[in-house]
Length: 115
Length: 116
Image 1 (cartoon, each protein chain N blue to C red):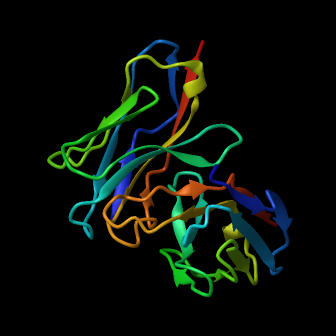
Image 2 (image 1 turned 135 degrees about the vertical axis):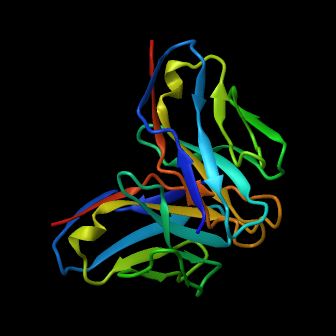
């Protein structure tokens, strides 16, 4: 069964601190994604990756970095966390689907509160 | 840019009643988007409910169905008789074809509460 696991599931961070959200997938998918969801908004894409060593900016990348050291792992890094980054973060994996509309497999989400 | 608008929640229905969650989209950068419904059950991550990649076609899963209507730019989710276990958050989304198909544009989600 497809599996995407995120850690930590819950995190309270201080303003200005560094936060790393980790994601691991056992699907052997090439593509991985980081989304965030805020009240009143749909999920918005922060960064994504096509494979190990690759990271690409999504729609809202400011204030975030990403790292893809291996096929299985994709991290989201907040070097200087701010209260505006308080949100629920979702990691997902998916394969290149051509014209078939690939399915994304999501983790359970990481709730981050920046105080 | 692209956008998805869906029914404001929460939507509350009784078990065995019918359900419709509206979804309309604007795909200014994608000529023929792929359309999706994802669902998030309590304590779980989002999972695909159904998808349709061809205009005019209908997708169905777990008793839910949605038809890709290019003329009205809609992709409404319907179910004839809901169950308490359908209580969840439902997300409508659109995405491009090709290698970047994971770059989806989501609606804000609709909370569905089904009472026994």
